[in-house]
View 1 (cartoon, rainbow, N blue to C red):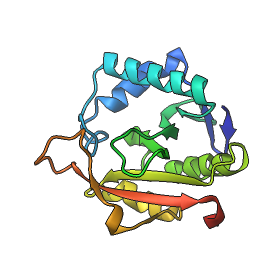
View 2 (view 1 turned 30 degrees about the horizontal axis):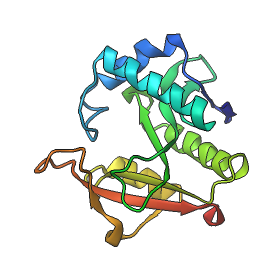
View 3 (view 1 turned 135 degrees about the vertical axis):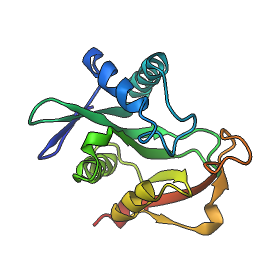
Length: 181
């Protein structure tokens, strides 16, 4: 899977991506709305291996996002099959993690739009979901910029997050191929 935008390249993970992605995953601010919070290098290695397996199995996945200008890994973004913790599945979800130096530059929106275009045109998907903790305003704002919509009746508690943790209540967003802007 290779997707290009004017500034970015979404591509399979490479060995050279592990160290910078591990740095991003060890940043408490980057992982603020994720559970578990920070990841070790070994956990990042395992995450990338899982993403690679998913890509090989399904033809789409959570991939590396590289800035074309200098080849810098800015994070990961892509599509994956959502887990059973998401009500009403099966679903294909879009998700992202960008390293802090690359925030607020429009990269996540640019990459996510291209990823959704790929979902509709190349994969023929009818719908993609996104979900995040209720308190994750930055990701919720991005989903809304993408044209994704939520219905409070579909909010759910993420059972992979311990009870009482403020990250447990989640909001589910949807976008259909017919909702394209």
